[in-house]
Length: 327
Figure 1 (tube, rainbow, N blue to C red):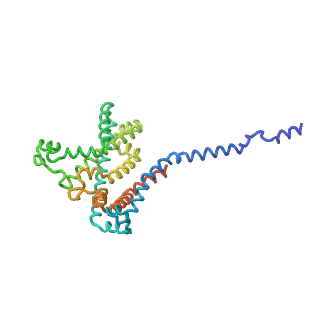
Figure 2: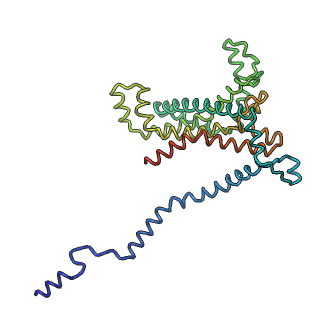
Figure 3: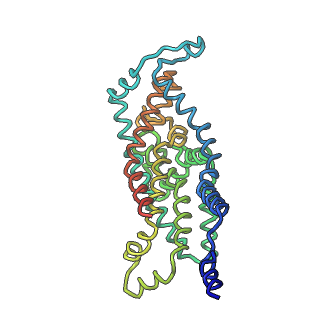
């Protein structure tokens, strides 16, 4: 009996769970590795396509920026390297720095108007009934879906000096001096039309995304704010903005990029006129590169444009990285 008892006590595996076989550890490790690598494998095709479609043109553009390339050299297939002369010529040019200042101010004004108007329309969508909300959403989608060139053509007709609806309407309201007014003959009026067009095309994106974000906020939070006596501005500052702060940062980030690189609206409306007074950096690069056939100079300007945009967005990059670290 003692021997049997001792044997029972020393029999392995009794009173505790058996150790997992090595094969189970291998399978668990394999599943863990696969789960960790799955997100990277899913985005790999998009990364490869982005590098192929954007990386090669960017590298090629940087290479051309170190060359003195014109139409004759393109025909003769000759290459004349100039080093950093294209960059030094632009960085020492007052025209370039005036264009940079103009582009930055143009971007800041447009982004501020877009975010303010888009936020107001998004809040309005959240307050409207179903039918009126559907009508407004349909109008926003139509404005957003209109091609840029088609929208530019519409604005050229609206602000035409002889047959434009805007001049006719203002004259009917009593501003008879606006009859026959040339909106594209002055820098401020031309920029006003361009800004109105860009804001009109960008507000739907901000408004619809803000409305989608508002639907994720519990209605109890707004009810609690109203019970505490908070008005519309206080509710927005204490409830809406803190919760949707990542949305506002991300949307502002996208709008700065979109407005800063806007080319079609500026060039198609008045080709950067009058006398280059409304040229932004993308238009300036196109006119110098393609218009004047100084392709190396145009490539240098476009490369500097990318560098300036990255410098402007460094603050938002830092904020977004900090938010990811907090998560």
